[in-house]
Length: 505
Image 1: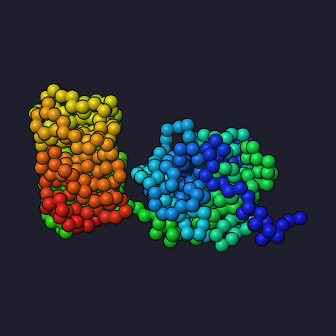
Image 2: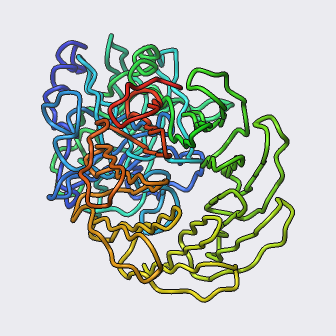
Image 3: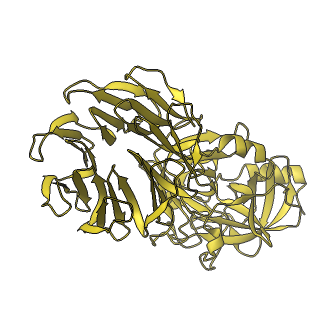
């Protein structure tokens, strides 16, 4: 005899939660004994690893910066940093492969009432597939597809996404009841994974895995395979308000110009005062560089564009197949996707000189070229492009040049700067905790791993001034400091280090 709806629902809600469980006991939404998922349209799926004990959950990418998953994965939570260190593997249907993206989670936003949390990625999953969120509820009798990375019928730690079909048996105000089609089941580790509606235009997200009887899961004795899903089809406004795209990603300043990479990957530049109007540049960008009277933009398809003179001048396509761009007043440096550093000197149409292979970063000034090799060796040459390289330091992960100064961030997170010739001695700036370093004129700026922007000017032994907190990106010139806030605008100050900030984007 079938249970009345209220009693059946109470039984389901008392079933084992699919919350954060050890990956050794994790499981996926899985057509038991069926194949792993291979449909590339499911590349919005996310596997989450939480904490030192390697707890596992599933999730779904709702935009380049945010993953939706189950609040129960994190326990009792409030908005802010996740209570457990969390890593998201995105778009990797087969976890043994190297495709997709791996990102850390730096913030979570729990829904006040439902088993739902948004997890922000520390860096965008550029080019990743995102899910379309449905705006109408499923109907009783609809067949939905569920996906997840949790435990299966025969494997504690699956290395692939699995899927299975379920039929909607009841639609509540905040949840869905679903019943297995065939041998589909939901197991530990599937929490937060998506349940999807198939449409002619692709998949639509209608819910996230919340609770299940776990029948058919490895080491479970229960035979029932029903489950409860958290509805999301009625939460469009909540997602819009709580999963924002960052206002800006990067700022680049000189004494007279400001360039911004916006959160939608458009670029723009302004000249003159902080409140002058913007000139819109290239879309789909990953980097903007402003130096002297030159502006450079590197797009996501690997094209380096450079203009000189007026901000409204036309761009020249400098090179293709590029992963990093550097500029000075009379030089352009690039690193190709296969790790070759090339530099040209003079006009925008000058010929390229191959400077070094096996390079991860290039830096240029009007008189110096620096490269950071893939082995972590910082090398600098002075004078012509055919001058000899002088090794500067090993164990380096970032290199910066300005005038007669050379700066590095070490793999241990320390910062050092030298001033003078290539054989000058290093002056330590910080021993640990440095994420990046910038140099310009007599200023040194560091962005710490705690997201604090610090700047000093004058002697290398001077003290740093804390400029701003919760910073995503830092840029300095001789008279300006620019920052991009993690949860706010791009701001610039002009004059002394204690000048007031002006939001610019």
